Amino acid sequence: MQDFHFKPSAFLFDLNGTMINDMEYHTKAWHAVMNEDLCANLDYDVVKKEMYGKNHEVLARVFGKNKFSDEEVKKLSFDKEKRYQEGYLPHLALIGGLADFLDKARDKNIKMAIGSAAIPFNINFVVDGLNIRHYLSAIVSADDVAVSKPDPETFLKAAAALQIQPKDCLVFEDAPKGVESALLAGMKCIVLTTTHTLAEFEDYSNILTFISNYNDPKLNTLF
Image (cartoon, rainbow, N blue to C red; front, top):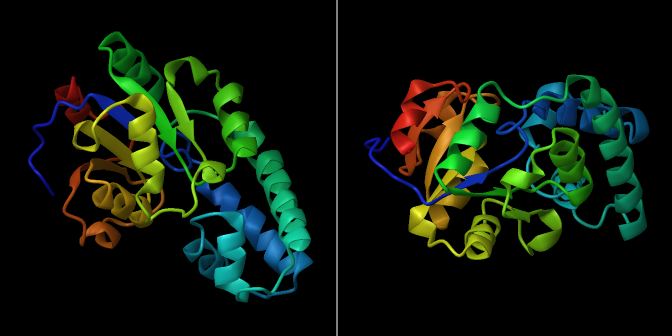
């Protein structure tokens, strides 16, 4: 972990598990699709381990490449996202302290963007459902990149959209693959401990600190 002395010009947020604590609902949705619809008989923890990247990448990792046609992938993805949104909607909320953190960043003229592997359908569900679009100068979704995290494309595109150099960006992430993406993009990172254990991040040199939510007083040093 690095020394906590950094004044970023931009904050880049992953979405799921980072701005909202919803990964359980994504996993539940995939678990239902894989077991009820596809009869895969997979344990919940096995499904949880594969919860990163684009939907077609998840299906390919679990079932093998070319198992499903493009039309089948499209239908399975829609069914999964429908289950996710129906399950999570009653619980839709920003992670603790984030509302005030966004206000403070805006007041300090720090640019903000989302860089997520989520599809626009889900990003819009969250951003508009929580009325936070006005804080964001850019959104990079799964549809905007050729390769998902840990490839750095997502965060590099977000930085370019903000016209901020990668070294001046700070990424907020909850997943090892996202931290790796930030590392490859040349960006420092703060990790939310919503989804993974601390031990899963021990190989990454770009982490400033770990926080459970945005009420952590360490964040005050960023401004």
